[in-house]
Image 1 (cartoon, rainbow, N blue to C red):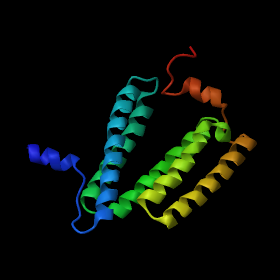
Image 2: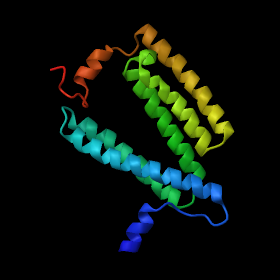
Image 3: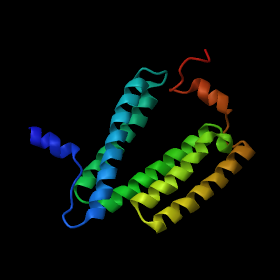
Length: 168
């Protein structure tokens, strides 16, 4: 039983391929962090004003992390690295959009995304996500300039499931 638990939490090792083992250990830590953060946020989401929405969001995060861990232990390190970068891109883009557009300090997340892609994939992955980030910044600019989001940012925060009640 202890050996099964130990093998579950430890990153896979690939004999003769230090780079793959290194990336797998980073991805293993990141995915376990996402899984535990998803559990904690999920518990909070169930107590929020919109428990069904919180449940759906957090189940998708938990499934994302669990699927990534399963693929990682099957040796699919490249696919997991791409999946984590894509998930980070979707998270950063949507979070920047709903928290103030380009005026949000969360725009710096795109830089984190490019660095992560460079570490986990290769130079072409970093260039790809740099281009995709610039494209997202442009789309977010257009959406906020034209008012296509449909609600004010303050209203999103006042009605959000993660509201702390400080505005009440």
